[in-house]
Image (cartoon, rainbow, N blue to C red; front, top):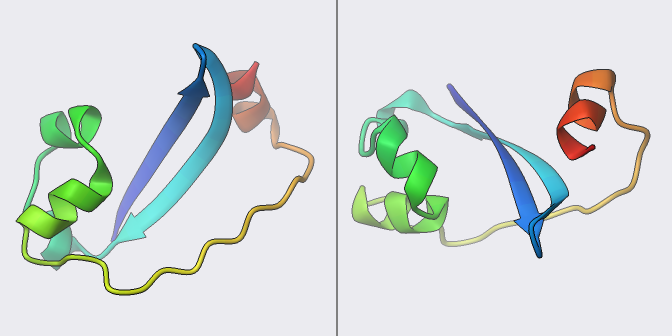
Length: 72
């Protein structure tokens, strides 16, 4: 599995910390440079693995120290 960690910003301020897991056979369709500059959905579509369905859960919890440091 490829583990992708992203820090999203809103108006220049840290907003969310995301961790995504992608099977290696799918992650072979893009490189780290593309991942740093393009949306994951776009990269998955180009790699022939367009998402068909997704489930998202948003919660508020106490952040672990490393995550808290990233979020400021």
